[in-house]
Image (tube, rainbow, N blue to C red):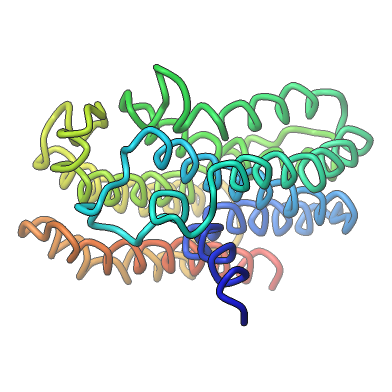
Length: 293
C-alpha cells in the first residue's frame, strides 16, 4: 500500500466509524422485524452515515491543522494536515468530494423512499460535519460535542434508518438508538478527557475543560449505566432478546470504567478509546442478532 493511500485511510479514522455503522445496522434490524427491510434505502443510509462521519473527520483534521490546535504535544494519533502528510487544500477538497459524491446521492435515495424530511436532516448533518470543528462556536470547542454525538449517532440515526425504509418514525427505534448514542458519547468523553490538558492550553472549552476531569470520569461510567437501563426498558416494552445479548457490550467496558475511575490519563486513554469503539460495534452486532434471530 502506498504511503499516500495509507495516509488517506488513516485520515478517515477507521476506529471511529463504528459510530456511523452501528445505528444503521440497528435501524435495519428494527425494519427487518417489521417486515420492511429494503436494501436500497438501507445501503443509502449506511453510505450516507459513513460519508458524513468521514467528512467530519476530514474537516476536523483540516480545521485543527490550519488553526494550530494539533501540535507535537498531541496525546492521540497524529493528524494528517498538522503532520504535513496531506496538504490543507487537499483535505478541504476531499471533504467536499465525499459529501458530493456519496452523501448527496444517498440523501436523494432516502428522500425518495422516506419523504422530504430527509432533505433538512441531510442538510443539518452536513452542517454539523463542519460545525464540529470549524468556526468561532465549533461544537468541539464549546462543550457541545457530547450531546450532538448522542443525538446524531443515537436516536436520530436509528429512527431515520427505519423511516428511510418504512416512511414512519418509530418510537421503539428512537429508544433503541439511545444506547449507541450513549456509547458514542462515551467515545467523545474519553477523547476529551485525554486531551483536556492540551485543549485547555489551546482555548478549547470542552466539557472536560469546563467542569474538570472528575465529572467526565463519572459521565463515562454513567453512559454505561444508561446503556444497561435502556436495554432493560426495551426488554419490558418489546418482546425481543436484544436486551440480553447486547448487555455484553457494556460489560466488556467494565475494566475500562474501573481504570478511568481510578485516574487513567494521557496516552493510556487511547486503549480505552479503542475498546469503547469496539464495544459500540459489538453492541450493534449483538442488538442486530437479537432482532433478526
